[in-house]
Length: 75
Image 1 (cartoon, rainbow, N blue to C red):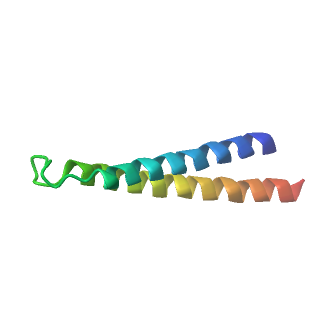
Image 2 (image 1 turned 30 degrees about the vertical axis):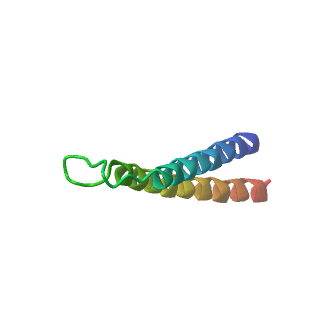
């Protein structure tokens, strides 16, 4: 059980890093002239999507770490 939790935590932390890097890449490639039908830059949409994905994966990682501490403490 502990090994599974460690692997899930590592995977979730990797997803955090991926969302962070993809969001930073969208921020670096901001082109104000490239807008969607609502008048917003397309990269702004990607930035927001990646920010929420990063926050979601960070929360999942924290929950997994808490469960891991509880499981390891009970053994």
